[in-house]
Image (cartoon, rainbow, N blue to C red; front, top):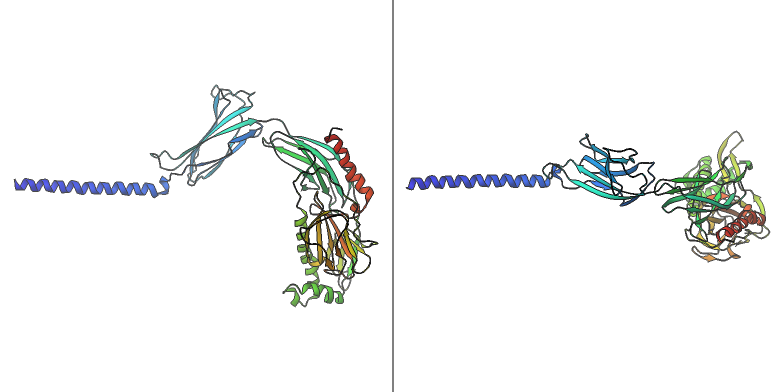
Amino acid sequence: MARKRNIYSSNQGGSKSLLIVMLGLAVGAGAYMLTSQSFEREQPVIDSVDHLYWNRKDPLKIDISDNGALRSYEVQVSDGTNSVIVTQENILESDQQHRTIDVEYPKRAINGVMLNPKSSKFIVNVTATDRSNWGLFQGNTATKTINVDVDYKRPEVNILSNSYSITQGGSALIVFQVKDESLKDFFVEAGGRKFKSVPYRQEGYYATLVAWPFNQENFAARVVANDMAGNSRSVNVPFYVIPKKYKTSWIEVKDNFIDGKISDLADGDPQLSLTKDRVHKFKAINEDMRAANEKRIHDIATQVSDSRIEGWLIQPFYPLRNGAKVASYGDERHYYYGGKENEISQSYHVGLDLASTKMAQIISSNPGKVVFNDYNGIYGNMPMIDHGMGLYTLYGHCSNILVQENDEISAGTAIAQTGVTGLALGDHLHFGVLVQGIEVRPEEWMDQKWINDNVNKIFKKANKIIDGE
């Protein structure tokens, strides 16, 4: 009897050991499944909003992705009555983490089922599965339902009024209307650049000042509108374009100028201040410092408020009483050292230089907000004012600035005094005008007739249409 008990005990011990081993294997397998990337449990991502617009001409684009690899996807489209599978794929690549699915509208029956071509709404169901071994090696599956509105209609764009002409280096105004129930975006493109628009008077109406850079030969303008379904409309603005030639000057650079004004500016740069090479120092100021200073100006002047305006009145700018012109806007300047055959640098003069008496008072002829009142390299002490509609004025080489940044000033406010700060040899004012970051002809904005013909009359004509007069 004792021997039988021993055999029983031995068998019992063996069973326990086997059970422990099996439990250990099970725990190990479970731990492996929980931690191994091949058994990851994260579902694929179907990247799409819940509601889309579709023109049915272009494919709907839906992105799917997975942290491991994608196995397959399927897209089903329903018109509320009939459903068809429009695309599906078993992905052969074992490392494909991303796919962009092009969903084409089925123009013909699929497996004998035809979607209603007159339906204005569809339901798109997307299913994506990854290559994980989770779920008994079936992988993780994600589904998404997308509601789709059909929209064939292009946005409406109506040009209400615009300046008759634009001169090279000058400005012009456009007032227009954009309409679409699912408008995505719109913009004014002029001279190859995009200009922001200001909401005007009533919803759907906009006003935009545009500019033609003085050193750009060709100019054309259009209003472009796009809707959420991918429909687009482009309408040309009928400007009469007037080319203009600007002055070219050759200027000799002398040692006393470099050792004086140029070195004074260079002293603010630790590296330039030690430079003995006069030509290098001049080029660094005239090109590198100028570019940095103008970038600062352009960055400020590209800001346009998106608040609706009821109207916009601008008076001719007359910043300096009895100011005489001493340098023109748009001059192309070539600098030589020793002889004309040794051209060392080139730049453009992008403002109008005016001079009267020493430290003369500078007036802002129009209300606005002071957006800059600091030193700006070659421009010296330089207040800058935002007058709305993307129109900015700047006043360079000032001896004193009399306003503070963020000041809201009224017409007739004294903002500064003329001086010789920056790259200026004599006491004068560098008066600059910018439209959305582009320097334009100050003379236009100093001319009452030009303002009447190109701004006031344009708004007046548009107002009659908008207000239904």
